[in-house]
Image 1 (cartoon, one colour):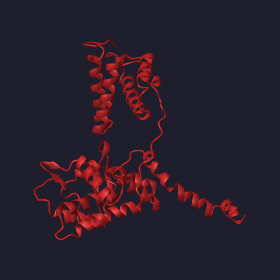
Image 2 (image 1 turned 180 degrees about the horizontal axis):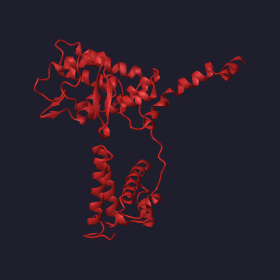
Image 3 (image 1 turned 135 degrees about the vertical axis):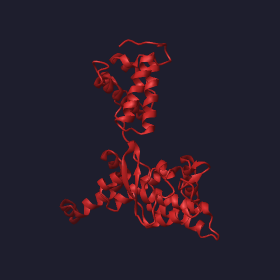
Length: 310
């Protein structure tokens, strides 16, 4: 495969552009990758092509080692992501017969350690709900406080992703149905439980949403943005006496997961509720139970009992 078109440094060549688009189309159509994943892969591949003067599609081990050297100043997580994108790209080229070899093994494997999620205690969450309750108790209640109540109940009570939450249709949460069906990352559908509290909060807010509006949380001509949701959550945290930098919509999703596990939830059930394709993603939450596990061993294990008697 020889490059065609402009292959000057700083611009992907025509061959690279075509191969990258073909790969991304496969990711959309066959792998069902999320839009954010496709965008990230596209960016990483185009940048790699630029660094190699538009010759990524025909790169060998020495070129990929050069890429690894260029990436050395970057965070390990960034290098891991870039390497994963390129390895998948070269595997695709080999599978499609577009090149005879797969040089992906030459890419760096930084072995990034997955960061533990930020966790809020149940007391922290209680303080946030107390702050909301104090707002709603005012007469007359501000509809925006009812909206905030519905948002927080769904974030913490059901573990929704921010994007899923802000884009809920107006009638997604039915008063007589304790669950909703969501299409999440990669187009995968999952069943999400909705608590009685959350359904009541949504019903109170929905009275202020005009019948003709398509979204449960409308804003302007569309729906509430993720940025605005982030701002609302952090402002509520500050009001509840919690440092705002500890709280975000995603942290509340983490709290949903960790507190369910602490309450004895099954890991596989939690995986289904969170919409994780891989159980390994869900297993990161098991760290929160480490203290309880140590206590359990000390109290219940025969060796623990023997030590206690000494």
